[in-house]
Image (cartoon, rainbow, N blue to C red; front, top):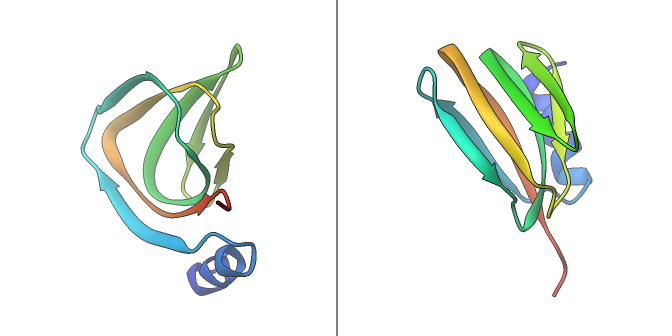
Length: 92
């Protein structure tokens, strides 16, 4: 997917907090949850997410989605990762 198209899609779907993230190699984030929805496009490297008894590795060109409040674990690969992410906060 084209980067600008993905960004436009995020904004259209209410993901107003859009940013480029770079994560160092082998970063591990223990079980946690976010108070916002996430949708991200992997640009480089890899990220393995584990949640609800499942595990999946995302690589370049793949999109991952995580709903607010979903407990999960993040493991970034040996090359780290770079991705464009949008965060959608619940209406107050």
